[in-house]
Length: 389
Image 1 (tube, helix red, strand yellow):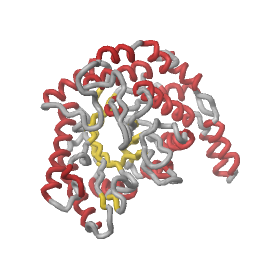
Image 2 (spheres, rainbow, N blue to C red):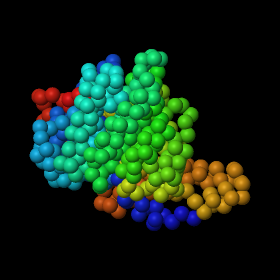
Image 3 (tube, rainbow, N blue to C red):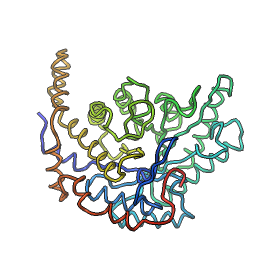
Image 4 (tube, rainbow, N blue to C red):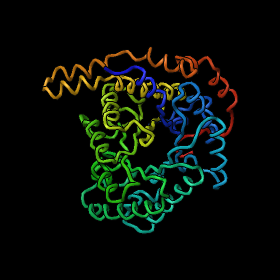
């Protein structure tokens, strides 16, 4: 039997990192829809992120994306970290960008030209410098590198270039910092992708060492992939560094986490808890772009979706599940999981929030706060933040 007090205590420790870019304008390749009140600089992004944390109590850190959040110098980043601290936040993962420069048309650290590879490495070193200035512990790497046509480049040599570049970045990070390597099945490369799956990411991280770990983006898999198996395996090997939470119905991954398949999110969170991954060592990050929905409420709702999946996973009666598994009772074992998943945990989470001194309904509390009206009225003029800004 699961102890409710233990479940509530665990939920009170949960932390979900929100991404700075989710507060800016975004869209598809067809259109970016601007919204009133969108932040114009990283500080205003942090101001919005502080509201998410204020009403959820579970979003204390914000990931930055360079150059989307680029500032003038290291002192500016130190000041930005102070700005975050004053709002009850801290700066989290630093995300690199080696996919929005014309020089990266044929790749970045896997590019056949050593001059381009050097440029990409210099950017990654810059990101580590920013980590040093902000106190961030994690550097997240996603590479759009790949090829479109058979014969375009040597597949094996590209892996050699990748390994060489990663090794140089790994050497640069500090003892208390981590390199988190993300993978993506395809896009924008259509023939080969240089880091297409968890196995490739795992192989490179294994060779690099203990400070290199794999990031699982829940939207970056082929249809039907058993993501919870990947999570369980990486946890078992001590190589799961974190998550990028989102949803997708087809191929892209910018929908709110839990929107497409909340049962999958529950299964993933159960394996996290089962494998001892519900700790500060695993980064639970959102990686979403809110195109047509209001941004701050969507991020609040996303945090709540993660909380609900976690609460259900914590309610799994693991003793009953283990007994059913050992006896080979297939239906009973499945029923234990389904009983937890079908539990309405919203009253439980409302109680947890009240015990933390929060409003039981974060979305409604935000709507009453008047923050949206305030920023829409005050953030007039200038350039709104968005992709590349």
